[in-house]
Amino acid sequence: MATFADYAALARLLAEQRRAGEQGAAVEAEHRRDLHAAADSLQHRLTAQGQRLDHLGRAIGVTAPAAGPPAPPPAEPSPPAAGPPATGHPGTHHEPGEGRAGGAAAAPGRPGVGAYSPGLETALAVPAVPGPRAGEADPAAELELARRYADEADRYGQQAELLAQQPPLLPTWSPVARALAVYLGCAAVGVVLMLVLVLASGVGVVGLGTLYAWMCAGLPAVSLIAGWLVLGRWGRPAMVAGTPARYPVLGILVCFLALPLAYCGYLLLFRVVF
Image: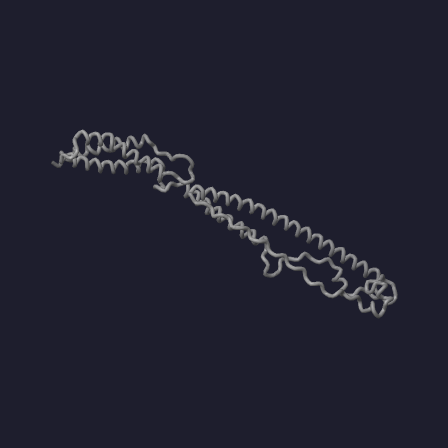
Protein backbone atom coordinates (compact mmCIF):
# COMPACT_ATOMS: atom_id res chain seq x y z
CA MET A 1 0.00 0.00 0.00
CA ALA A 2 1.40 3.43 -1.02
CA THR A 3 2.35 5.88 1.67
CA PHE A 4 2.44 9.65 1.74
CA ALA A 5 6.23 9.60 1.20
CA ASP A 6 5.75 7.66 -2.03
CA TYR A 7 3.27 10.21 -3.36
CA ALA A 8 5.53 13.08 -2.26
CA ALA A 9 8.49 11.52 -4.09
CA LEU A 10 6.35 11.08 -7.19
CA ALA A 11 5.19 14.69 -6.98
CA ARG A 12 8.83 15.88 -6.74
CA LEU A 13 9.72 13.72 -9.73
CA LEU A 14 6.87 15.18 -11.76
CA ALA A 15 7.88 18.72 -10.76
CA GLU A 16 11.51 18.11 -11.76
CA GLN A 17 10.43 16.63 -15.07
CA ARG A 18 8.12 19.58 -15.69
CA ARG A 19 10.93 22.05 -14.95
CA ALA A 20 13.26 20.07 -17.22
CA GLY A 21 10.64 20.14 -19.96
CA GLU A 22 10.14 23.89 -19.56
CA GLN A 23 13.88 24.49 -19.68
CA GLY A 24 14.18 22.32 -22.76
CA ALA A 25 11.31 24.20 -24.40
CA ALA A 26 12.98 27.53 -23.58
CA VAL A 27 16.28 26.33 -25.04
CA GLU A 28 14.51 25.08 -28.14
CA ALA A 29 12.64 28.38 -28.53
CA GLU A 30 15.91 30.33 -28.21
CA HIS A 31 17.50 28.03 -30.78
CA ARG A 32 14.61 28.60 -33.16
CA ARG A 33 14.88 32.38 -32.72
CA ASP A 34 18.59 32.20 -33.52
CA LEU A 35 17.86 30.13 -36.61
CA HIS A 36 15.19 32.60 -37.78
CA ALA A 37 17.57 35.53 -37.24
CA ALA A 38 20.34 33.76 -39.16
CA ALA A 39 17.92 32.91 -41.97
CA ASP A 40 16.71 36.52 -42.19
CA SER A 41 20.29 37.81 -42.28
CA LEU A 42 21.18 35.30 -44.99
CA GLN A 43 18.08 36.31 -46.96
CA HIS A 44 19.10 39.98 -46.88
CA ARG A 45 22.60 39.01 -47.95
CA LEU A 46 21.34 36.94 -50.87
CA THR A 47 19.06 39.78 -51.93
CA ALA A 48 22.02 42.18 -51.96
CA GLN A 49 24.02 39.65 -53.96
CA GLY A 50 21.22 39.38 -56.49
CA GLN A 51 21.11 43.15 -56.89
CA ARG A 52 24.89 43.29 -57.39
CA LEU A 53 24.73 40.54 -60.00
CA ASP A 54 21.90 42.34 -61.82
CA HIS A 55 23.94 45.54 -61.85
CA LEU A 56 26.99 43.68 -63.11
CA GLY A 57 24.93 41.95 -65.80
CA ARG A 58 23.49 45.25 -67.01
CA ALA A 59 26.99 46.75 -67.07
CA ILE A 60 28.39 44.01 -69.29
CA GLY A 61 25.26 43.79 -71.42
CA VAL A 62 23.77 40.56 -70.05
CA THR A 63 20.10 40.66 -69.14
CA ALA A 64 18.61 38.37 -66.51
CA PRO A 65 16.19 35.69 -67.81
CA ALA A 66 12.52 36.29 -67.27
CA ALA A 67 11.12 34.59 -64.20
CA GLY A 68 8.75 31.74 -64.89
CA PRO A 69 5.33 31.26 -63.32
CA PRO A 70 5.41 30.49 -59.60
CA ALA A 71 5.24 26.86 -58.62
CA PRO A 72 1.89 25.71 -57.20
CA PRO A 73 1.79 25.29 -53.43
CA PRO A 74 2.14 21.73 -52.17
CA ALA A 75 -1.11 19.91 -51.43
CA GLU A 76 -2.01 19.65 -47.79
CA PRO A 77 -1.96 16.11 -46.42
CA SER A 78 -5.33 14.58 -45.77
CA PRO A 79 -6.21 14.07 -42.11
CA PRO A 80 -5.82 10.50 -40.82
CA ALA A 81 -8.89 8.33 -40.65
CA ALA A 82 -10.56 8.23 -37.29
CA GLY A 83 -10.04 4.95 -35.45
CA PRO A 84 -12.44 3.14 -33.18
CA PRO A 85 -13.29 4.87 -29.92
CA ALA A 86 -11.08 4.06 -27.00
CA THR A 87 -12.58 1.58 -24.62
CA GLY A 88 -12.49 2.01 -20.92
CA HIS A 89 -10.62 -0.04 -18.36
CA PRO A 90 -11.80 -3.65 -18.22
CA GLY A 91 -12.79 -3.13 -14.65
CA THR A 92 -15.44 -0.64 -15.81
CA HIS A 93 -17.60 -3.39 -17.27
CA HIS A 94 -17.12 -5.96 -14.51
CA GLU A 95 -16.69 -3.76 -11.45
CA PRO A 96 -18.78 -0.59 -11.79
CA GLY A 97 -17.98 0.54 -8.32
CA GLU A 98 -14.24 0.60 -8.83
CA GLY A 99 -14.47 2.09 -12.34
CA ARG A 100 -16.76 4.88 -11.11
CA ALA A 101 -14.40 5.61 -8.25
CA GLY A 102 -11.51 6.52 -10.60
CA GLY A 103 -9.89 3.20 -11.42
CA ALA A 104 -6.15 2.91 -10.86
CA ALA A 105 -5.74 6.62 -10.01
CA ALA A 106 -8.09 6.62 -7.01
CA ALA A 107 -7.18 8.50 -3.85
CA PRO A 108 -4.88 6.67 -1.47
CA GLY A 109 -6.27 4.97 1.55
CA ARG A 110 -9.40 3.54 -0.10
CA PRO A 111 -9.83 -0.19 0.14
CA GLY A 112 -9.00 -2.15 -2.99
CA VAL A 113 -6.81 0.56 -4.48
CA GLY A 114 -3.10 -0.16 -4.68
CA ALA A 115 -0.04 2.00 -5.45
CA TYR A 116 0.69 3.60 -8.85
CA SER A 117 1.60 1.12 -11.50
CA PRO A 118 5.10 1.38 -13.10
CA GLY A 119 3.67 2.57 -16.46
CA LEU A 120 1.68 5.41 -14.90
CA GLU A 121 4.83 7.32 -13.92
CA THR A 122 6.02 7.32 -17.51
CA ALA A 123 2.60 8.33 -18.81
CA LEU A 124 2.43 11.35 -16.51
CA ALA A 125 5.97 12.53 -17.30
CA VAL A 126 6.42 15.67 -19.40
CA PRO A 127 7.64 14.63 -22.87
CA ALA A 128 11.12 15.82 -23.84
CA VAL A 129 11.65 18.15 -26.82
CA PRO A 130 12.21 15.95 -29.84
CA GLY A 131 15.46 16.41 -31.75
CA PRO A 132 16.00 15.97 -35.47
CA ARG A 133 15.03 12.53 -36.65
CA ALA A 134 17.40 10.30 -38.50
CA GLY A 135 17.53 11.26 -42.16
CA GLU A 136 16.12 14.77 -41.62
CA ALA A 137 18.21 17.85 -42.49
CA ASP A 138 19.62 19.86 -39.61
CA PRO A 139 18.55 23.53 -40.05
CA ALA A 140 21.76 24.84 -38.47
CA ALA A 141 23.90 22.73 -40.78
CA GLU A 142 21.87 23.82 -43.81
CA LEU A 143 22.24 27.49 -42.85
CA GLU A 144 25.97 27.06 -42.37
CA LEU A 145 26.23 25.44 -45.80
CA ALA A 146 24.21 28.26 -47.35
CA ARG A 147 26.47 30.81 -45.64
CA ARG A 148 29.54 29.14 -47.12
CA TYR A 149 27.97 29.23 -50.56
CA ALA A 150 27.20 32.91 -50.04
CA ASP A 151 30.84 33.52 -49.11
CA GLU A 152 31.93 31.80 -52.32
CA ALA A 153 29.44 33.89 -54.30
CA ASP A 154 30.84 37.06 -52.72
CA ARG A 155 34.38 36.02 -53.65
CA TYR A 156 33.48 35.26 -57.25
CA GLY A 157 31.39 38.43 -57.43
CA GLN A 158 34.35 40.54 -56.32
CA GLN A 159 36.54 38.87 -58.94
CA ALA A 160 33.92 39.57 -61.60
CA GLU A 161 33.71 43.22 -60.53
CA LEU A 162 37.49 43.56 -60.71
CA LEU A 163 37.45 42.09 -64.20
CA ALA A 164 34.59 44.36 -65.22
CA GLN A 165 36.57 47.40 -64.06
CA GLN A 166 39.32 46.57 -66.58
CA PRO A 167 38.95 47.53 -70.26
CA PRO A 168 39.12 44.85 -72.97
CA LEU A 169 42.17 46.50 -74.56
CA LEU A 170 45.40 45.96 -72.58
CA PRO A 171 43.55 45.39 -69.27
CA THR A 172 46.67 45.19 -67.09
CA TRP A 173 48.18 48.45 -68.35
CA SER A 174 47.74 51.87 -66.80
CA PRO A 175 45.46 54.34 -68.63
CA VAL A 176 48.38 56.54 -69.71
CA ALA A 177 50.40 53.61 -71.00
CA ARG A 178 47.36 52.25 -72.81
CA ALA A 179 46.66 55.59 -74.50
CA LEU A 180 50.32 55.99 -75.46
CA ALA A 181 50.40 52.51 -77.00
CA VAL A 182 47.22 53.15 -78.97
CA TYR A 183 48.37 56.51 -80.33
CA LEU A 184 51.79 55.09 -81.21
CA GLY A 185 50.14 52.21 -83.06
CA CYS A 186 47.90 54.56 -85.02
CA ALA A 187 50.86 56.83 -85.76
CA ALA A 188 52.82 53.80 -87.00
CA VAL A 189 50.03 53.02 -89.45
CA GLY A 190 50.15 56.68 -90.54
CA VAL A 191 53.93 56.39 -91.08
CA VAL A 192 53.37 53.36 -93.33
CA LEU A 193 50.82 55.33 -95.36
CA MET A 194 53.23 58.25 -95.51
CA LEU A 195 55.95 55.99 -96.93
CA VAL A 196 53.49 54.82 -99.57
CA LEU A 197 52.80 58.45 -100.48
CA VAL A 198 56.54 59.16 -100.61
CA LEU A 199 57.06 56.30 -103.01
CA ALA A 200 54.09 57.47 -105.07
CA SER A 201 55.56 60.97 -105.12
CA GLY A 202 58.91 59.57 -106.30
CA VAL A 203 57.28 58.03 -109.37
CA GLY A 204 55.22 61.14 -110.05
CA VAL A 205 51.78 59.84 -109.02
CA VAL A 206 51.42 62.24 -106.07
CA GLY A 207 52.59 65.83 -106.14
CA LEU A 208 54.99 67.29 -103.59
CA GLY A 209 52.36 69.67 -102.16
CA THR A 210 49.89 66.84 -101.68
CA LEU A 211 52.60 64.80 -99.94
CA TYR A 212 53.43 67.60 -97.49
CA ALA A 213 49.75 68.30 -96.82
CA TRP A 214 49.03 64.68 -95.94
CA MET A 215 52.26 64.32 -94.01
CA CYS A 216 51.81 67.42 -91.85
CA ALA A 217 48.04 67.53 -91.40
CA GLY A 218 46.03 64.74 -93.01
CA LEU A 219 47.72 61.60 -91.75
CA PRO A 220 48.37 62.95 -88.20
CA ALA A 221 44.71 63.96 -87.92
CA VAL A 222 43.55 60.57 -89.18
CA SER A 223 45.88 58.80 -86.72
CA LEU A 224 44.62 60.97 -83.84
CA ILE A 225 40.97 60.31 -84.67
CA ALA A 226 41.61 56.59 -85.05
CA GLY A 227 43.34 56.40 -81.65
CA TRP A 228 40.54 58.44 -80.08
CA LEU A 229 37.91 56.05 -81.43
CA VAL A 230 39.86 52.93 -80.42
CA LEU A 231 40.24 54.17 -76.84
CA GLY A 232 36.55 55.04 -76.69
CA ARG A 233 35.48 51.62 -77.95
CA TRP A 234 37.90 49.16 -76.38
CA GLY A 235 39.57 51.25 -73.68
CA ARG A 236 36.45 51.80 -71.58
CA PRO A 237 35.82 49.49 -68.59
CA ALA A 238 32.36 47.98 -68.34
CA MET A 239 31.78 49.12 -64.74
CA VAL A 240 32.98 52.70 -65.18
CA ALA A 241 30.28 55.22 -66.04
CA GLY A 242 30.97 58.08 -68.43
CA THR A 243 33.65 58.46 -71.07
CA PRO A 244 37.09 56.93 -70.51
CA ALA A 245 40.29 58.96 -70.28
CA ARG A 246 41.65 59.37 -73.82
CA TYR A 247 44.46 61.92 -73.18
CA PRO A 248 44.00 64.07 -76.32
CA VAL A 249 47.10 66.19 -75.64
CA LEU A 250 49.22 63.07 -75.59
CA GLY A 251 47.60 61.95 -78.84
CA ILE A 252 48.30 65.29 -80.53
CA LEU A 253 51.96 65.22 -79.48
CA VAL A 254 52.43 61.64 -80.62
CA CYS A 255 50.55 61.78 -83.92
CA PHE A 256 51.63 65.25 -85.11
CA LEU A 257 55.26 64.67 -84.21
CA ALA A 258 55.67 61.04 -85.24
CA LEU A 259 54.99 61.51 -88.94
CA PRO A 260 57.24 64.56 -89.57
CA LEU A 261 60.02 62.94 -87.54
CA ALA A 262 59.57 59.70 -89.46
CA TYR A 263 59.82 61.64 -92.77
CA CYS A 264 62.98 63.41 -91.58
CA GLY A 265 64.45 60.06 -90.58
CA TYR A 266 63.56 58.68 -93.99
CA LEU A 267 65.37 61.53 -95.71
CA LEU A 268 68.47 61.10 -93.56
CA LEU A 269 68.50 57.34 -94.19
CA PHE A 270 68.04 57.88 -97.92
CA ARG A 271 71.00 60.32 -98.06
CA VAL A 272 73.25 58.06 -95.99
CA VAL A 273 72.48 54.99 -98.06
CA PHE A 274 72.47 56.65 -101.44
